[in-house]
Image (cartoon, rainbow, N blue to C red; front, side):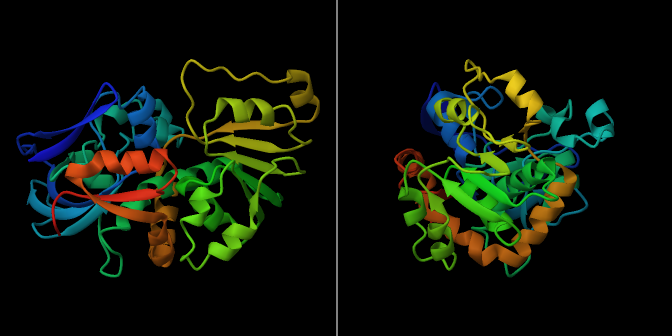
Length: 330
């Protein structure tokens, strides 16, 4: 089977053996795998967890072999890329996103013709696809779950004004979820990505939310950029009683600094968010069911697996949001 590998910042398409299954595993024929900011970051500068090797983790497909009684051949499925053990110290704290064994129960290699879903992931986070949801949009449940986890961490009761840093697909997901209950603005150094959504029914509302200056009395700031330069500036001017969510990862050799006295006397909260939890997956699933037609607008391109490098070059240049990769002519 064909599979995309990342090797020292270069993508190679390899022909490898179809994975063999252990008890409880499921094998799917991939219909679509979506690109995301994590994959782009891995492509551009590496990732301390994913490193080199097969990549891609937002997937949908059809079950072609199963050793798991929950699924049968022909089932149309989609899912999350990991599962928690339920027994480690973090799972007992309801912080399943930090599960000690998370890396042992993870799905990578969705940019391929076939994908093995390990038992624990199949048991907990592989779902039968509702007929009304397309194979193309179903994989968005994974980043959407991460967004909902970030919102859970923020605890927004009593807050009103939110500024989202970044106009990529993650920033727009935050916007779509939060706009009903909060005054939300999006700050970006470029309007290019928002302009990719001109045909979306929410475009006018999104466009009107765009600001080119992050100064303002915002209760909450959500960073989806991971930009060291931008955050270094933001941390100098946060208002009293505000919160900032560090959603995006940054280069591991970068260290942010801030005035501790100012943060102390103004009780400013710095909050981090990684991955997802069972509760955020549940919320993402419900949101996807209700809003799948809107979310599909975030997928701006479809590209065949053999041309996957083009997908990441388009994303790097700001000419694409999410790209749907398909392994062969559907």
